Length: 167
Image 1 (tube, helix red, strand yellow):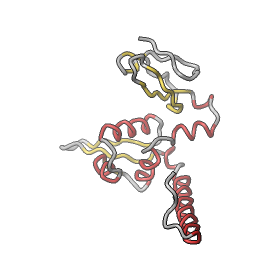
Image 2: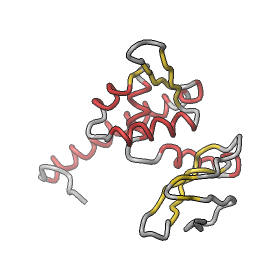
Image 3: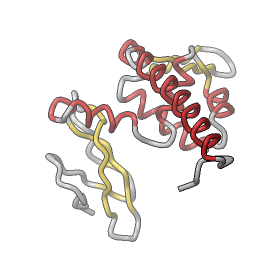
């Protein structure tokens, strides 16, 4: 079955039973999200586009977007970590979701996966050389988040409201 993307892309993808048959070419970085309609009421997310062909901010946002991406990078930025340790730190993330997110970050060259020849097998995830360049950004995001919390807390204390409105 051939599926037409909902958005315009410079490539086509053939999908059969939720599996991408045509792999991205060498040098293609997984950076751009697209939603493909399967025609059976389901949707498939795909990320593949030449990073060099995109706006740098768009590339950044597409790599870092997602519910778990920044949380994963933050935990891994503290040092090498094993799969189950990440799963505990990011609860309630599903095992399948964690595995998929780690695989995506590895494909994007943001993290490395090291398998130690032991029984039982030991696998550690760490930031790659490219991934290490995101550490200052993560630290600044944390600093900004702290500043935001303090600002909101002060504002609501002055306003007399107990907590920020949930919108």
